[in-house]
Length: 228
Length: 255
Ligand SMILES: Nc1ncnc2c1ncn2[C@@H]1O[C@H](COP(=O)(O)OP(=O)(O)OP(=O)(O)O)[C@@H](O)[C@H]1O
Ligand SMILES: [Mg+2]
Picture (spheres, chains in turn brown, cyan):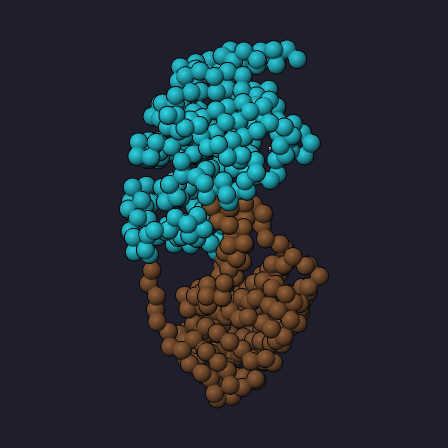
């Protein structure tokens, strides 16, 4: 397996630009952070502050892949994404949660021919999680694609609330939501047990598998593994 | 001394209150290859999953002993860790969990992990080569996005790594092209020659049995084994079909 070593940085400036780079952000010093994306950027995020707002500005034709894995414990976080002409976003948010948590993702599609793919995977440890995913597609814009895929694993369905919301003022948009709240898949669990894994180990493996499934960056996948 | 691997006595199994097997008997010794045949829906996969301790099936009566231990008191994990291995008729896909992760964890859980990571990888690479699978399969998610034939080979990769002593192959020959079928059959034969496990083959086809030459062939019909013979019985069934070969099927048809 080829692993490209990525630079790990701490972001201290309130306004931060990344251009044609692959970086891992270890820490954000500000709780309200502006992030400008120019060109093709692969971004890994390892931690976020307690109450966090990240404003992501995708410049024209920018391509951003974000991989994020966090352990949420009484955390409110909000991602505001502003997409310009022909920009493309792949947003992969994986988390385990304890305590009471909120995630808001707002996508402001302001121009034409943009594409946004928002994936969220959440595993309950012991807590609640409210997820709001909102796409807002401006009037008179054309040929935008907006896809949302939000999945949560829990034994207590009432602990999770997912609210997808799409405000489309343009009729030229392809939009799709997909959200599921489920328990561990029993067939998958039985399969792993039939290969000799103890039940609790198999459950952990399925949970981390679920969280890793949407991630692309090896560094971030590694975080999920080491969390077990 | 002949070691009894599996001894199934008078087993009655239901699922959702429907009786699938009734007074089912079968005994398999170490080093024996058995074939289980029978019409679609006869209950072949059911017995395979019952042996692997699938909790969806209720045991109404009867016993199963595995190497003198009461299998019905074992969990699926325990059965697997003590050497039972099943290749399901339709192996499921698990996104996010790789072959290597699963195998390494399994060897650990069974307390059998005497290989370091390099030896473990080397063994997997060799096996991939033997099974004509790209070595990228080592880190692929279990059966995920694999073709039908690749899944079956992938399951054999697991078998070779876990080194079971009692193997149940539920239609491992379905969906394989001619070359893959030969490769799969020869791989099983090689495993057999090396480890002398007990093997139960569930199949509808002749090719696999031609290579593995079962010692015993059983016909499952009307919820139980209605006939047991040698390889010749299988040949008769392939030639004449079940109804003319098996005794009970005819009375079954008169019902
Ligand atoms: N989990 C289940 N729930 C409901 N019915 C089941 C279940 N498992 C098996 N059955 C039923 O039990 C019967 C036997 O099924 P089984 O899969 O064992 O047949 P089989 O002999 O393997 O058939 P095939 O040759 O088609 O694979 C069938 O009628 C099937 O519908
Ligand atoms: Mg079957």
